[in-house]
Image (cartoon, rainbow, N blue to C red; front, side, top):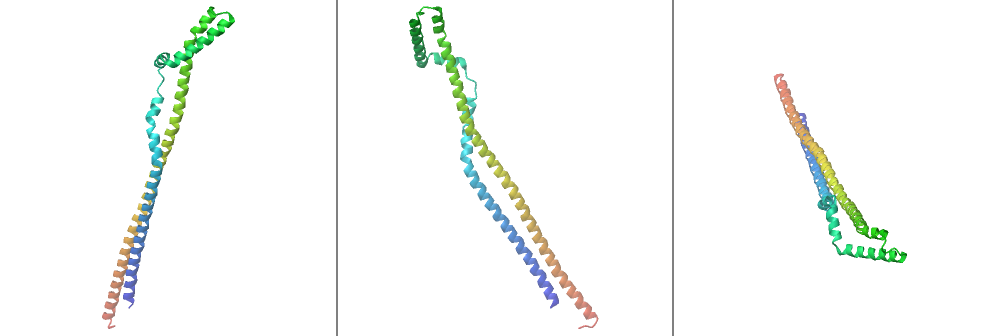
Length: 208
């Protein structure tokens, strides 16, 4: 009965080690599935912001291009806007000069001649201000997308590290379970051998 008990105990221990290893493997796989699910949800939440920011990159690049002063001024001087502004400025200056009695003076002529350059300079300053305002708006959107992309990358890196650690634990559990099973079989075989040796010894001594 002692031999049978030793064999049974060894086999039970072998099965228990196998069950424990299987349980650890199952728990590890469940952890991986859970983390993948959370990762997919996180990526889904961040993706619209990442796509939004990425979609603004082309516009941002265009906004960063230098303003073509000659082209902008040429278009402005030929526009109805300039004609209206220049006409208003001339009329105001002529009215003021007439009231002051200097309608035909050199000063009046110089002031009228300076209207076009001054309006052109004001127009370019407005263009630069609009460009900077547009740049800031686009940059805000691009930064939002960049932050979302960084969040996606960090989440992917964290998932990779965690899964790698869990896979290492699964491998260790499987190896440990296999080793424990082998040890259990060795113990069972050792118990059988010990029992046979004892029986043989007793037989030779006339114990039977």
